[in-house]
Image (cartoon, rainbow, N blue to C red):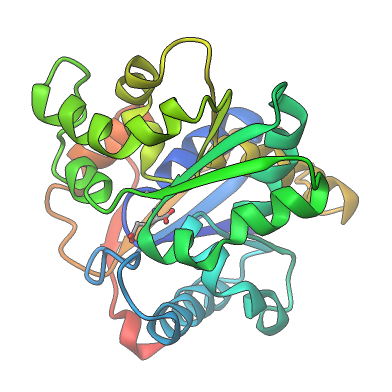
Length: 270
Ligand code: DGL
C-alpha cells in the first residue's frame, strides 16, 4: 500500500519553496502539491474569495487521502484561519511557525513583515508577534509587485528592475532599523538574495516555508504520523491551469529538476 502523503497547497508556485524544505527535512515522506495556477494571485482578492478557494484546495488534497494539510501560503494562513475546523487531519499554515522563530531571532525587538496586501491588512503576523512578545515593534509592508516578478522569473539580484522594486518597498523598513525580516509570502524566498542585498547582511531573513517544514515534522511526530518506510518519498504535482512550462519554473523554486508527474485538475469541482 502506498504511504499516505503530506498535502501542500498554494495559490501558485510559491508553496514549492516550502516543498523544497520538506524534501530536506522529511525526505522519506510522499508529498502531493496543488498549485492554483489558474487563479493566482490570491493576495489582492477579498477575504471571502480567498476562504472559498482555500477550502476547495484543501478538499482536493483530502480527496487524495493526505495525512496532513499545509497551507504553504501566507495569504491563506492569514485570512482563512478557520480552515483547520473543516479539515479532519492535522493542519498548519505558515504564520505560527514563522512567528515562533522570529521572536527568538530579533535582538533589538524591531521586526519587519512583508507579504501580499491581504496578508498585511489582516495584521496576522503582527498580532501573533505581539502576543508572543508585547515589546516587539512590528513594521509591516505589502509588496504587491513581488509575486508577479517571481512568477515571471524576474529574480536576479543583478537585475536593476528587481533591485529598484525591492528598494521601493523595503527602504522604509531599513530606515526603521529592523534586525529581522519575515518573508511572509512563500513566493519571496525566491527573491531572497536580492532582498538580502537591499536590506544588508546584518538583517536576518525568516523564510516562512522553511519554518513550516520544521514545524510539520514536529506535528507528524507528535501525532505518530511519520512514515516508518525509509525509502525516499515521491512528489505528485497538480495545477489548475496548463502544466506546460510548470516543470521549468517549478525547478527554479525547488532548486532541482522535476521529473515527477504534473497533472491539471478542475478545482471548481471541489
Ligand atoms: N504565495 C502566496 C503567499 O504566501 C501568495 C501569492 C498570491 O497568490 O498572491 O501569500
